[in-house]
Image 1 (tube, helix red, strand yellow):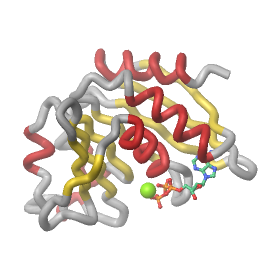
Image 2 (cartoon, rainbow, N blue to C red):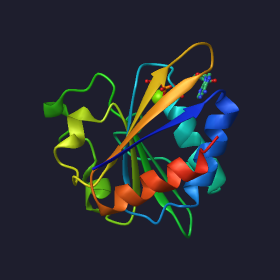
Image 3 (cartoon, rainbow, N blue to C red):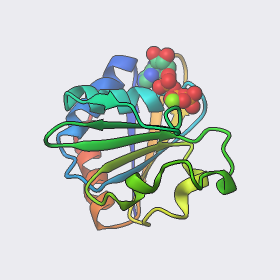
Image 4 (cartoon, rainbow, N blue to C red):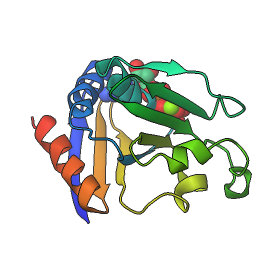
Amino acid sequence: MKQGKIFSSSREQTLAIAGHFARALQGGEIIFLRGPIGAGKTVFVKGIATALGLKSSPTSASFSLMKKYQNKSHRLFHIDLFRLEEGEVFNLGFEEMLEDEKAVILAEWPDPISRVLPQDRLEMNFILKEGDEREIELRSFGRVSDERLEDLCKIAQP
Ligand SMILES: Nc1ncnc2c1ncn2[C@@H]1O[C@H](COP(=O)(O)OP(=O)(O)OP(=O)(O)O)[C@@H](O)[C@H]1O
Ligand SMILES: [Mg+2]
């Protein structure tokens, strides 16, 4: 396990960090986004999608819980399981995502699905500070996520 900490002082800075980070993604990464409502988790995901030029394509039943973004070179799933219980994630259409080893998975409120995802994951914990300040604690749990954690720390160096 590796740990780190990065900071953002504005929405724009979070978008910029995410945009640079997007270029480090190889496919297959699993990223858990934790932290309270309004912390900036979705802003981070948007920053990645925008930088890669990705548009979301509609998914079926689970549309509000899962968005799929793709183009020729990248596939990305953004899920948000706020208020879902673990027993409720079956039959919601996550099979495609779970079988796709080359897609990047970005998960807000990931606990309901965390047990069926591989252990090698980067955890980003967004902490609200004064005003627009955010502290983002990083923890990684395997070879792939260790590398991404180091990428993020380099990108966000003050
Ligand atoms: N440093 C910052 N980084 C990201 N967003 C910021 C920052 N400072 C202020 N904001 C604002 O905080 C809000 C973050 O909203 P966002 O939807 O990303 O939150 P969230 O963590 O996804 O919450 P939820 O759990 O409800 O999905 C936006 O309105 C954004 O403009
Ligand atoms: Mg969100």
